[in-house]
Image 1 (cartoon, helix red, strand yellow):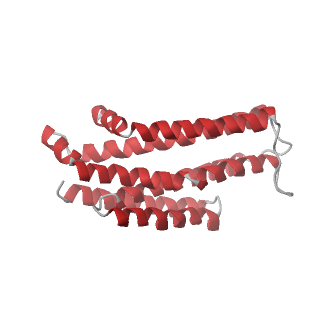
Image 2 (cartoon, rainbow, N blue to C red):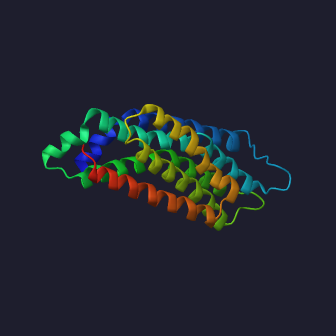
Image 3 (spheres, helix red, strand yellow):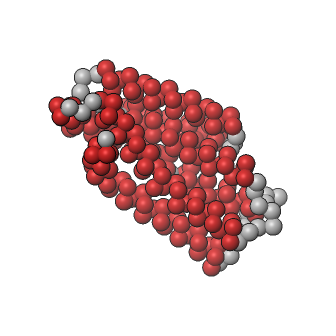
Length: 217
């Protein structure tokens, strides 16, 4: 399994490098604004601590859900196009192991984006406390909703990436990803949003699993 995960990471190393680079840029921006510039201005009536969390989560929702969908789609599309799983299956590797390795690799990629930014935000909130810090429940719901949005988008990407039609894959990324982001826009950072995104993720992965296990490689 570790060999399969390593191979997946090596195959998608460019995605990991890009994710790490952009995350590092945003972390640097956060530190510069809050430590050097001491900028923490938000809309009137919104507590400074909550505005800091909102600012971070909005950044995480602008671009990365599309990248997560694309990551999942590219994993499955390139696998099918290059017959990678077909080759691996001849080496006494099961389909379950192959797909599990892909899922773990995708999860690790999302952590590369998410973890540095969240940790930086937590540390900055501790070092430079606001007059009114957001409660831990609000903080957890914000970042849990965003991360589940990533996972839902990634799961959907895996599902549409199994098709051989690039147009269908591109349309899926463009049209469905905004709908998943809208779940948070409509429901807010709430348990309802978390429940909807979790259900969508489970159904998408189940569908991908069924197709991957039954379709010819």
